[in-house]
Image (tube, rainbow, N blue to C red):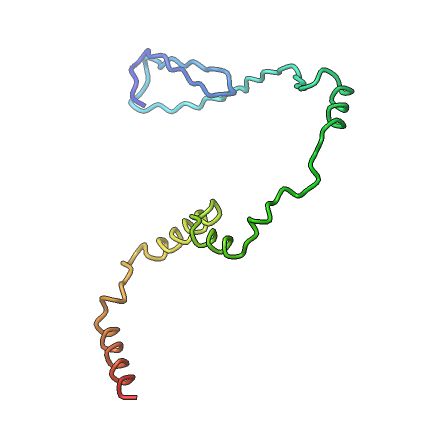
Length: 139
């Protein structure tokens, strides 16, 4: 870090006390300093957040809940054709996106030192393809 003689440097980080350093006048062109950071610990009082004023009121509210006893699934949504359509048309979820990214990343590591070849541009593949077409036409 370029500084001048006599400059004051402030070293700070979250969770640590701020340190000050003044560049000495007899410093060489290169100066290395090691600054030991001291933790700045702030203790906070415990905070209890309760939506109800007392535990008894909370218990009464829970017991007074009128919960439906069905499983909450509409039987019309269990149609096999509808589920198949949803699977075909739904975009990738987070796990599928992660798997796709990791596959691409691992492939890029393999291709790092050589270009990936396109089999459609290989003349030998085309020659085999045409040969196989001719053989199938004869049979």
